[in-house]
Image (cartoon, rainbow, N blue to C red; front, side):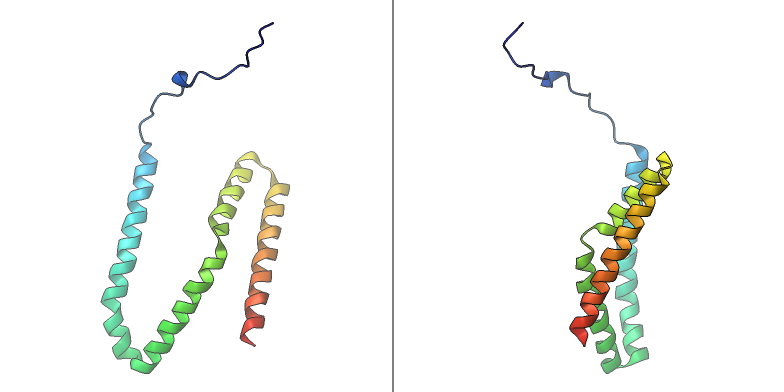
Length: 120
């Protein structure tokens, strides 16, 4: 027997595969969505200021700023939950889906309770 450890030959790695069309399409739509969101925000802001008035617009902007701040507590759980659920659906692992949904519900309920206690 040989005393040398077996190491993988890195030169035989998978060949470079072309970028999948669905990846490019999805990335393009994602960028279009971000651009559309920015465009609508810029175009509608003067209208909303006229409609609400300066003071109410300030309150509206403050509420959305707080919501954006709270969005940081998501920590990427929402896309991770969607990813896990679709994987388990493909494998028909319904018990695992139940575990993911229950864990997510408990996390977000706890987060909501924690934030509600800060406000009181």
